[in-house]
Image (tube, rainbow, N blue to C red):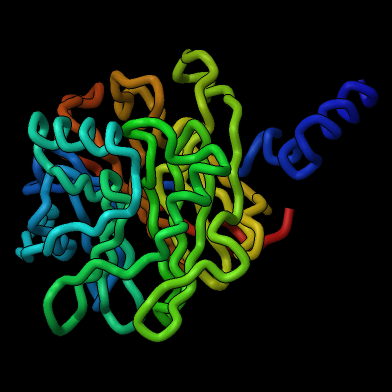
Length: 328
């Protein structure tokens, strides 16, 4: 038995093996269905200016302030007009597929993530353009001047090679000077850029981490192994936190390397019989982490869960005992 464990450790890396073991389960404090979001497509969450905000990947011209003090949570839209998206040097064929998909389903910009800095500026991640729209607290929306080699470096590392598997998560540090992006799958990975005056640069390279391979889904899903994924990203207390949709877990990672340090599962709460959705890959897509816990948003699209609820759901999990900084 010990020999088999040692062999696995050599193949996977000891930290990965440790996290493959049974994880501590996060405790669900409450869940709230949200009315007013387009077709249930909740793709990003951020706590900003004393309120919880959400974005939908079907809306190119609005994000939502959530009325969380009411018995029934309501999404109130805030309109904006985005200027034309920059050319981030994605292949023409991929851009054409994204354009066609946007026509069919709505949401040509495909906003898949939302973050906020301490000044109240909001950052929206466009998957189809691999670009970030800044909604400043005061002023008009502008696209960040991200480095042109960002996409090239990501693709050279095996990421951003497949349609609908591009950038899926975004987070910014409170000062608004470090921006982190998560590539979704086939391969998944983490990217970082640093602000220097009005532009953003890759300092020592854009790619923090790139990971391939597959992993098993939670037993309750009864699904075959699928590609590892990231569906959300958060910054808290000088650490990165990744939302891993298939595995139904949140992982704390190093800012310097993206290496996993500890993971917590939410599978036991998310996969109760009444909360199950038809897809076998998981539907959690939005993440915000604070000292007291984590907000996790569900993008259920047109699916209803087993109890008949068809609106997007936001879960509030308590921080683990000992806090997010707890060592294994």
